[in-house]
Image (cartoon, rainbow, N blue to C red; front, side, top):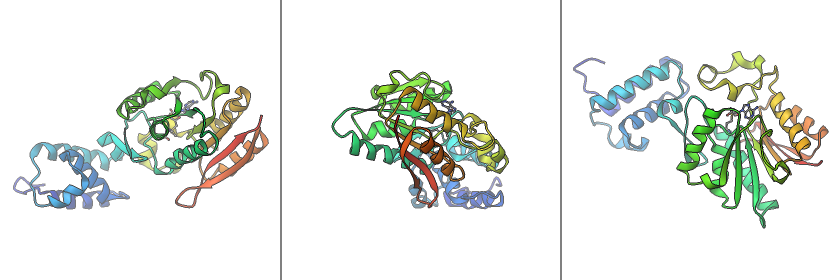
Length: 292
Ligand SMILES: C[S@@+](CC[C@H](N)C(=O)[O-])C[C@H]1O[C@@H](n2cnc3c(N)ncnc32)[C@H](O)[C@@H]1O
């Protein structure tokens, strides 16, 4: 960028898209637009109506810094500090996983279970590994009678999840619990549904993860600390049976291990175990009824 260049919105975008593309970015245009809109404090769509506007020095400086960090692999959501999930905006930071679109299926499944089985009564949900709180808060936001325990082993994640609950006005119905899986959940036998997107990347897959993910998202949110990535999911199911916690389980996992987890569920106290597919046709989450 030379001193004489007039940096209009269009020019900045074109330059950045080309720069990101050279850095093997998967979605150069989208990344560039999100960052520039955030730097300008406007909606992405507005960029197109303001193409010829010159960008002032301050937002341009902020944008330039973000572009550099994005090219180094920092995810866009961490740079701008938020991500949309289930049509709600969640604050995110380096202590939490960035919510993924496929996880929205868990929210829909829980809301369907509530409508089908708990329509006439209050319902208690536990979200294990809440991270940003995206699942717990989306459920509470869409179901007035749901009380949700949002559990995490990371106090930093819980801190952010609390902020998100305040932001969406559901703090009174979401309780935050620092716990290893269900260990510290009070009155586990009164829980109706356990929902979880636990860490499920096996240590043997660590090198296959995209660098953005492996080097920037918290390892406590990614890795289950066993070779195959099943240990936390299996422990969660064992605890549900031991503590008589939850009539239903809704569990996200990797398409690579989901059949193994479904068989584990079937053999260890669950019935009506079904594997569901995401929009991409991948086997992505399990719904099961606890039997014993
Ligand atoms: C894959 S992230 C999911 C975050 C969020 N629920 C989502 O879907 O975006 C997994 C979360 O589980 C938490 N976690 C890891 N081990 C845990 C454990 N033993 N007990 C409770 N939470 C745990 C991590 O801190 C992380 O926030």
